[in-house]
Image 1 (tube, rainbow, N blue to C red):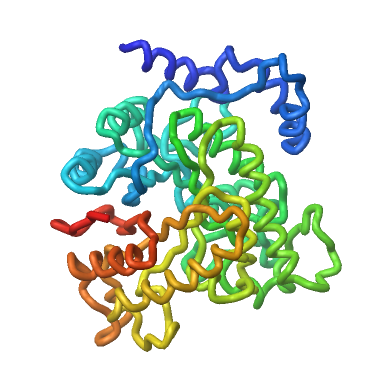
Image 2 (cartoon, helix red, strand yellow):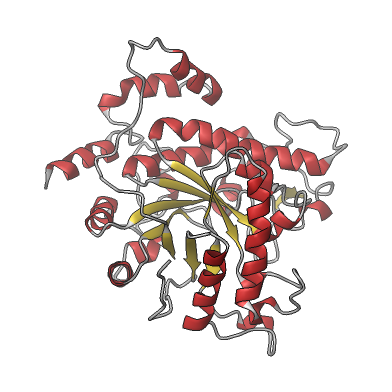
Length: 395
């Protein structure tokens, strides 16, 4: 075992991945996050400030061009296929599930960890994974699914939404936890910190929102408002505040770990002042992140930008969206990097005449549309991690 792996193993096996050398951090982390961060800032200049340093060396690429990777793929044979893809093309990054869509952490944590009971062995050897990514110069991004979390909702119904005596589920049988609750925030940020200590260079938060259509049930379900007003006079703004506050809080909490913070957001939110049900405000979220990743798959649009059937016109729908997003971000004093999610899958569920079989031409059309509008970073989504061959990813 090399020295780097020995050091990383010490981090992984020391309780909550802290390591005995991080006593100052542990003392600080016992306090609420805002006090924690302000304490760091207020320490005299001659005193050392806690700043975690990973033993891995990853360089930010000229522009991140990445693919989505499940925990199963990251811990299985498909990883080698995906590494070969990055070695043979202009792709250079992977967004890897660390907390998945069900609420599972995708690797086993040490006994005594707060997250041990939700850890799965999908990634059997996380140290080996990080070494392979480093060796092949693959930029690692940890995906953390936040408020869609059936596992946590069932374990702690008081942190979720209840329909009578039962935890509420959507039509797909999925449950969400409550974005109004700071306990939920801290739970997810703790997992993000574990990922940062593993060596991930960026934390990407997904499902940073209320359930879709929540505006139709916000007065029917039972749930806590946490520290937010109970009067429900402006439900939309209260939801927007909760989602935005979480993002700002997470960015602050992760500051000592020297990781970038990104958020996945529905593309259509850029077309509205704010999305009324889910609580996403494109501008407000963008003010608190290093990277904004709008999900702009052509299949996910309805009739926007004068395009009646967006899945049939990937170049046009992405081009029009990019123009709009550029305008929105230009209004910010310190805009984040734009790194949209684009489509590398076929949306046959749209029905005959409404979808294309997506392949080389359709993927390249989306990339070209982004590049022409000055957006050079992007992420490819395919739920099965099977990406189209022979695509020209050259910027």
